[in-house]
Length: 82
Image (cartoon, rainbow, N blue to C red; front, side, top):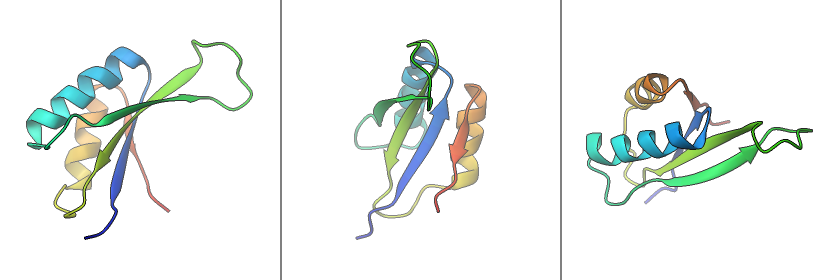
């Protein structure tokens, strides 16, 4: 079993919550994905933060293109893994 994670980057908490709920339903995930606040480097204002939706894909079954499409529906994107 591999430790594959997909990270969706969303513009705000509401979008991240909605995307996490939609991902859980659309991809039949066993649990709602984790939400993580990601303050932008050098920014002190709480409004200047992105939200990350972290999706564990241990079986490597999720299609990155479908995940990116979902993120785009909420004005975000799929972060590319290095």
